[in-house]
Image (cartoon, rainbow, N blue to C red; front, top):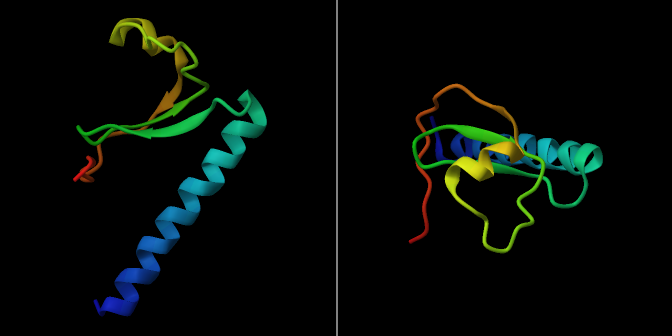
Length: 77
């Protein structure tokens, strides 16, 4: 795969995520978003407006649907 092909495929992924984010916001409001978890799961969430965010268990109520496992990695450098 060339660098140009790689860039095109990465852009396709970004575009798909952006469309999904738009769809979630249209259905659940501006607080909805796509959440990429470090373990490879991707979640569609209808919000997480609580400033304290609560425990992981409490936050589960915001998940609308989750993906199967993917090989992506996430984090901040």
